[in-house]
Each structure stands twice: as C-alpha cells, then as structure tokens.
Amino acid sequence: MPVVDITELAAHLPPGSLVAGLDLGTKTIGLAVSDLGLRFATPRPVIRRVKFGVDAQVLKGFLDRERCGAIVLGLPLNMDGSEGPRVQSTRAFVRNYLPLDDRPLSFWDERLSTVAAERGMLEMDVSRRKRAERIDSAAAAFILQGALDRLSSVRSRLAATRET
Image (cartoon, rainbow, N blue to C red; front, side, top):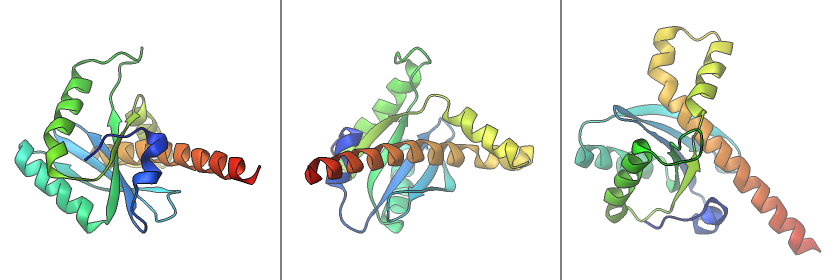
C-alpha cells in the first residue's frame, strides 16, 4: 500500500471504488465510507480493537466488502501541529498494515474531528449512550468528508486548468 498525498489519491483510486475514512483509536477503529461520486461520507459501525493481527484482518475484510479502493486515515496531530505519541502510534499501525494491503492511503489532519462530531450529535439530540457508541464512526465520517471536499476542489481546479 503506498502512502500518497491527498491531492494524488483520486489518481490511484480504481474506477467504481469507494474511499474509506478511519479514525484509529486505542479501543476502536471508527469507520466511514464515501459514495461513488466521492461527495459524501457515511459512518459505519466501529471495529472493536483486539490485537493488531485481528484488527488488520477485520479492517481488510470491511474494506473488501465495501469495495473501498483507498483509505483516508486521521492523523492525530497536537493542536500546535506537532506530532506526539498518538501520531507515532498511528504511523506504527500503518507501517505494520502496509504489507497486508495494496490500497493507497492518505493521512488527513484530524484535529478537532471528535469535537465536531460530538457537537453535531448534540445538535441532533442524540443520547449520551448512543453518542458514546457512534462517536468514533462520526469522527471518521468527519475526517473523510474533509478529505473528499479537498479532492473535489483539486478535481475542480484540474478541470478548470484543462479548459484554459
């Protein structure tokens, strides 16, 4: 699996495939998938983490079932943009996962994604219990939506450049 810049992700995406968004936590992996048009992110149920080997197989099975051709993984940078222990853990997960899957992967800055997801759920009056169950997937959808919006703007600029 190659790690590519988000601006190059669409070029590596096989036709007819979706993009998966991941929010990697210590206890769960939040999941979301795009639509075929790469415009909307939809949350999916979380993967409960056990150990890397099991987590990787469950994740790969999910990506295969959902016909995902690429992955956007939230990168938990510190608020000042520096990389702390959570970023190191995320990069270690990717290093271990690289040999198992050939899908391209892009990192996406996930600062405040969980806060934004929680705020959205509060606005929808989701109960505390349901918020706890769904927060990681909602954060994954928030991460993926940001990446999809970026991909859309890159595609629009490329199309405008071709027209001139």
